[in-house]
Amino acid sequence: MDPKWIEASQNWLDEARLHAWKYFRSDLQVTDKEDSSPVTIADKQIESLLRERIRSEFPDHGIIGEEEADENLISKYRWVIDPIDGTRSFVIGNPTWSNLISLNYKGDPILGLANFPILKK
Image 1: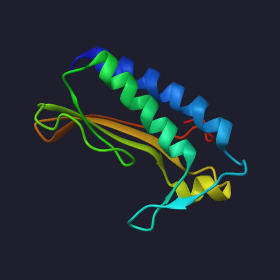
Image 2: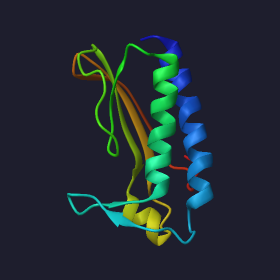
Image 3: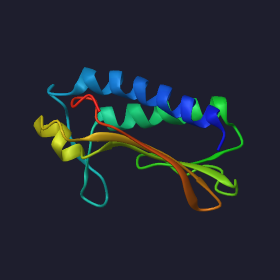
Image 4: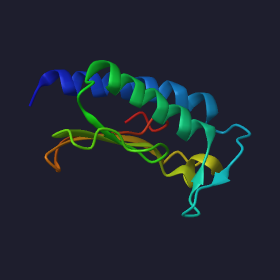
């Protein structure tokens, strides 16, 4: 495994954490997606941030996310993003939500990180 993938994804999640803190326990507008799951501006902005970082550092990699259309799915390497896993918890102020990112190679996971910003884990 290339160490730059680990370092980059850790840095990205540090940025995601800081972004999420701005919105946690704030007066967020919540909307429902087609599958009736909630989404907030924090979800959308964090995913957009992570996509931007992936495109910049690994432009030939694919991206699969929750809030935007999938990109470059023909790539052998695909990042999977869940900007806020546990949006319902996030919205009600429960600290057990996380930011998730993984990297798959030919469909198999080779790297996965979970960041629990409020729990500092």
